[in-house]
Length: 116
Length: 112
Image (cartoon, rainbow over all chains, first blue to last red; front, top):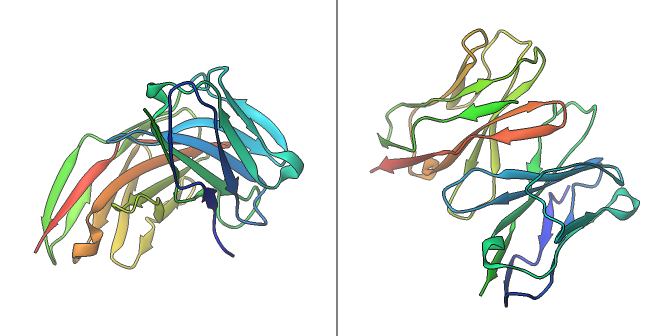
């Protein structure tokens, strides 16, 4: 069990550029989540997948944001036409529905985005 | 809608002493889970302790224990014998269904 893996760990981009983050969940986990965290705040829910199906999206997720989870394995989060307000830590987490861990979600190390 | 409130932005404790972090939540669900996560300066969120709402017994993990008061919707974390490595942000979290909701966090300082 290698844990939740996120890449890249840090990304600096110019305003208006597109960025993509990747998340590899714990291998047997069927649920995958994206959260956003800014300094001094708790993580805010963005979206959730069960297997390959995206079941919920937060209103925080504007149409510039898109997330996919092809084949129910890894996931990508793309931000188009980045804005300075997108600067944050993007956290991926996974969990196992029906497992003994009781809905516990396990986080990756996060991907820091800085938009300049 | 469910909410999680942590009313202490910062707390400080002397090494080897005990500290309690507060958390309250609001929900109309009867079946849910509560968690405390720790986020050290390295930024990765680490699970500290978990409590199932249907269990009356308070969860304990080594030096960490909770005081779960379901009727009052209160879920505090007690850290005994505090260590320098306990210094971090602590987040209280609620899961009902699939979504986990976090409080704003409490920053814990540990003095040597």
